Image (cartoon, rainbow, N blue to C red):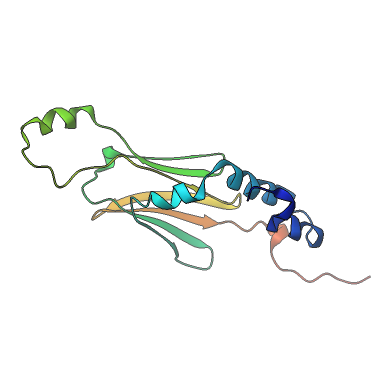
Length: 148
């Protein structure tokens, strides 16, 4: 979206209240990222799974990677999962005549809503799962308003 005047976010602003920060955030994402470029980088493959009413998992297929090969961090509502480059591995591969199974360097980032809490990460059988839970504050839960 090169022209903000025609963005979907600006079309929604007149009929919403209190979503300015969210719309600004999405517009920054669109401006800061080349989505065509992001679509080309599909490695590693991943799923985003809703595991319950308020729980989610991001699952990345990372066959061949160990816990020491992966860094998971969370800052400013962005979850980043990336591989750690191992200089020692390059030395170990010097005698390899054919390397058909290679660990590629990667970095994947996901924007996480402010009311979603990262619960943990687990690497099992080549699948990294990052568990999250949406925490609903009391003031956002459904309630009946008494009329005076």
